[in-house]
Length: 323
DNA sequence: ACGCCTACCTGCTTGC
DNA sequence: TGCAAGCAGGTAGGCG
Image (tube, rainbow, N blue to C red; front, side):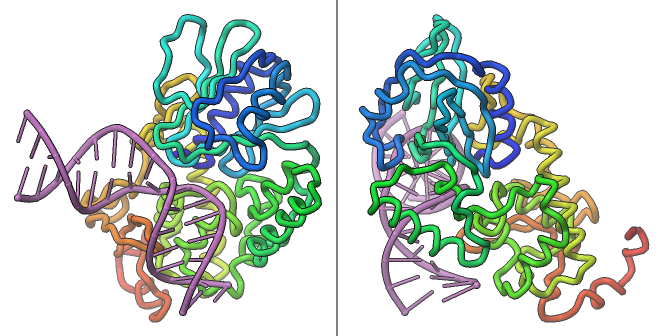
């Protein structure tokens, strides 16, 4: 399941391989892949002849910027993949949208489970229409309804209006994280998965970041000390960067644009390791369900001190190696 | 604000 | 072996 590091890997590959390419034809094989409000036929028509200028990423979406200023957004969701196929490559029964390029190659959007969505929008700043964190969701919905009513062009900024900050951006400081956590009583795990709280983190990296920060996924967000917020901030960035370095974690059927799986799955500390020894203390990793999501953690290294206090776990031996 | 539910999909694993 | 149920999870939308 592609999260920030996986999507970043795909975007970087595509930037190298298809920047400058011209789209000569588009075949939509599963209509619902094309995001409302553009009907699939219009989508194909609109793209014919377009030149791909640059490929980037926002949240978990690949952004394909066209030379005329428009932006194609590709949300891979669960099983989506963007693959560059050389001429003669056998067809793929799971290719939902095929972009034919002028040089004979194809850019294929493959998606076994059909959850992913591709949209085409007017360009402009990604920050246009940005709504401040907490109220993001409801306000962004109202705003989009307004845009629809007025038949105004959808801008790519509207698509991401409800998304939270990019965790790897220089402006995402520990201070900023601290401000966003303040007054939030939700569990840490739930918040890390909330795209309007912070963009790009999914189930794998949420569990990894919490393990590295030695924080319980059940912990109420507004009970963290400054030191704990600092640890969380560093951990989030560290696990995401490591993910990018290793070209992503391949679980399910994630592959990069080269069709190769990433190497990060082998380096995960807790995700998918239920019952296996914790890499820090050797006790078995446990699994529980939080907010309908499977959650992996070490109950010993990540004690839930919401009700008790950190001191209880902190003062009891085994901690001399802290620091 | 928050938690919980359902829908969207299909392939894989599990249990009988 | 075959078949059905259960599971995986990112996101949108709805309800209390």
